[in-house]
Length: 301
Picture (tube, rainbow, N blue to C red):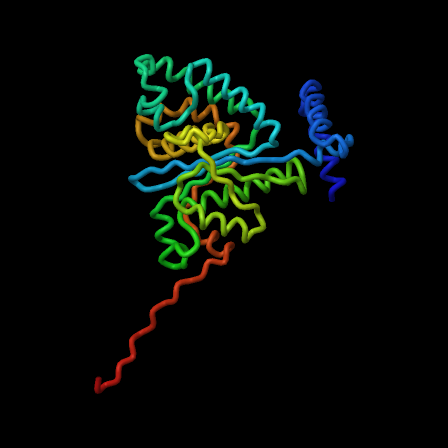
């Protein structure tokens, strides 16, 4: 199995990596593992990573978790391209809530320009689209969750966020195992702050996955030691676009979001909205709720 994985990595790298990058990877491997470097060793050392963020809508209440999976070297190349795109527009980071509200780095009067805003979004979408990553997204509404919770003890182990996040992680693993490597390690990184982190950690570990890693996508006031994870910013972009498009798809407002969403269409290859959770509950061994039996009272009571 290990030799098979090495073969897959070698074939992928020689087919997909330009000679310059390939040489850089080998040079870095010689520096990091001078005593253990071999031609095959560099490929064994390659890792994979998936990043995810959530976006919620209050009415009707629903949540989308979206993100991407790829080899780490692709993520490193993406980070460079994303930072260059931000520098082009003179902003230190991207955060959708701040962008839509013209707050934070987007508070300058020039960000009122629809032309500039559209150009900025198109640039970020193009960076994501051309990065050759695997896009994954899941959506669960509160209504669907509550309906399943009436039949199953669903809320003892899950909430809508945990369902979406877990399914995204499992799908990321499936894609990486199918396309890249049977055995290489995979990191699962989520934006920090969504309710249910403890439940998600438990469910992932129960399935043999490593514990999720929680990070911040933007600077945290008063915490200069927190270094923003750029990769989560494109996940924020995707989750917001999908959630907004889902809510407004039958309204004229949808036209405002269609262009940037279509730019991501080729990347988000595994989008799914759960219309029911019956199969999910059965597949994950969620216990049924005990039906209340008829009351038995004695005649003289």
